[in-house]
Length: 84
Image (tube, rainbow, N blue to C red; front, side, top):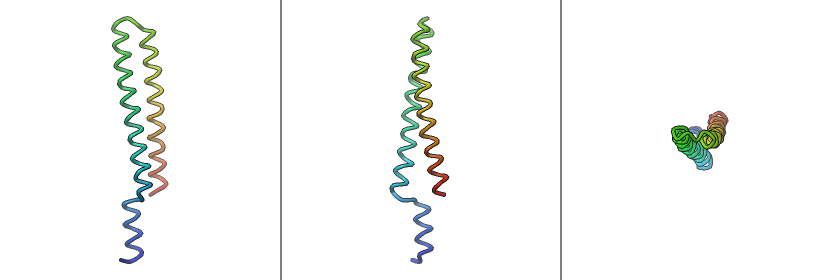
């Protein structure tokens, strides 16, 4: 196999370190999106029960998870941009 073909194949598949980093970023983002969704559902229940202080607390926590998910997504985008 020529060096060119080997380099193209390696670039297309990416290294295992690169694949692990990409996988890790997606898993982090998904985990934080799921937690944010859970907290938004919790906030809705608190609002329905008239407990607006608890709803606010859940909303703030959800926003924090949203920010962490966005950070993981940004890292993944940078990873893809740098490894084109």
